[in-house]
Amino acid sequence: MASRVAIIGAGPSGLAQLHAFCEARKKGADVPELVCFEKQSDWGGLWNYTWRTGTDEYGELVHSSMYRYLWSNGPKECLEFADYTFEDHFGRPIPSFPPREALFDYITGRAAKSDVRRFIQFSTAVRWVSFEEERGTFRVTVERLNDRDTRTEEFDHVIVASGHFSVPNTPAYDGFRQFPGRIMHSHDVRDAQEFTGKRLLVLGSSYSAEDIALQSRKYGAESVTISYRTAPMGFEWPDGIEEVPLLREVDGRTAHFADGTTRDVDVIVLCTGYQHYFPYIEDSLRLRTTNVLYPPNLYKGVFWLDNPRLAYLGMQDQYYTFTLFDAEAWYARDHVLGRIFLPPREEMEEDIAAWRAREAELADPLEQIDFQADHMEELLKEVDYPAFDVQVTRDAFKAWEHHKEESIIGYRDRAFASPCTGTMAPLHHEAWWDEMDDSMSTFLGDGRRRDEFSASAAPRPA
Ligand code: FAD
Ligand code: NAP
Ligand code: MG
Image (tube, rainbow, N blue to C red; front, side, top):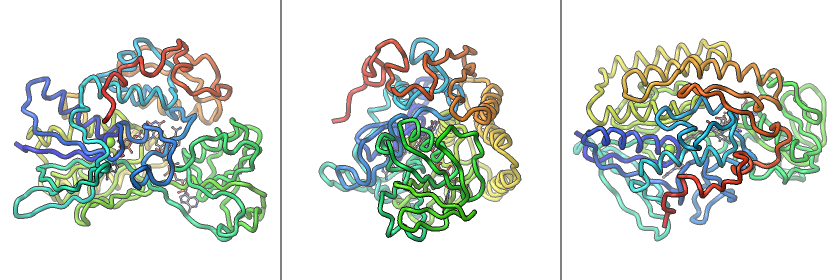
């Protein structure tokens, strides 16, 4: 059995991996030594909000892309941990679309309960991962940021859980150099009140574009123009938001679009997505992909084809998040523990090709949801993750797609049933469009503060 496992990142995926090993140990398994390296000073990954943008106190790229007033954009029932339900954490049912702080509390609540913090080296950035053919092990070079101490350690398995919604994709358009206002990527948005009274141009037609357009207008932007490349989102936007075809150029403050129309704008926000960026992994081990549901060269969406002792978690475009990460983490764990054996390379290659061929044929979001649910279920059926009703989550996601079409400002005012407990969620006491306060205490409506929940019972990093 493997003796040492490195896990890179302590976001939801890395925490799922640590937790999966703890669960096996609880049931008596002999678990290898686990070392998790996390470059931030706390856990939670993207959910660990920071006011910083650009580089952090050590000169590292700021990881988090989250901003104030971020509410879950999908029903929480579709990401509920089957072994730690929302009711387990909050002590009662809560509404289906929680704000960031409540989800951070939930994710880190399970991690605190299983005491995985002891495995994590915080403020420690992975600098290089390579494979030593002769020894058959990985060499992992890390830097401890507070004293710049660099060292290299040997591992039998490496699990990459460093996320892929952190390094911006930033296209340029003619006239950007002369634009007399701010041009920024959604990764650097922190507080929509920065845009109060301003005329915004948002580029992109996916989740960030939708969310930043809506919340900017909600917090007082004068107008928001959303420019799409391939297709408009096509929602019925509230007054003050409109969608137009692709930007051609900006001339001074004037944006020119492909249909010949123009708008004068004060700020441009590029909601143009992210790069899968792994500068710390040697070429032959490095995943190269765009944001798709089934990236190339990953068997089961997890194992690096050329060397399956290297695993990647959470590298898919994401309808499913925390439960998919759990399924991947349990599966990766069982491979490390010698409970799951992978087939010969040729078979793995064929399997990846079949999934990717199916992805290429998917017609719409409803088929994409089923595709990702099928992928998740294929993993779940091989592992001892507690059962939950996946069909309930498929149906919830599909209903959610329809709710968005019915009302883009109203879809968060809906309630879903838990796939784990069957409990129907209550409704939030305010409509999302009118709720300006995204704090957890207001959300829970009972005046409880964050530090009264289990997550913060965990010791803070030194
Ligand atoms: P991350 O959360 O990105 O965590 C990766 C961790 O790896 C980070 O802590 C990082 O510091 C660390 N790391 C990176 N590089 C290194 C290194 N070299 N050395 C050491 N550590 C490193 N999902 C939902 O389910 N619901 C939502 O409402 C939702 N909202 C989102 C909003 C935004 C703006 C974005 C960008 C994403 C959102 N997501 C949402 C999706 C999000 O991807 C997942 O929820 C989740 O955070 C992914 O977890 P992860 O652990 O794979 O990656
Ligand atoms: P994304 O889903 O990858 O979408 C990228 C968008 O950028 C696409 O619409 C793409 O257009 C567009 N684009 C790329 N290059 C472009 C160019 N050169 N010119 C114009 N447009 C270009 O990225 P995302 O929207 O940032 O979402 C990332 C993740 O964050 C998702 O998982 C999402 O769920 C999450 N998120 C969640 C919330 C929330 O929960 N509240 C909020 C924001 C984001 P094409 O369609 O033409 O390719
Ligand atoms: Mg992680």
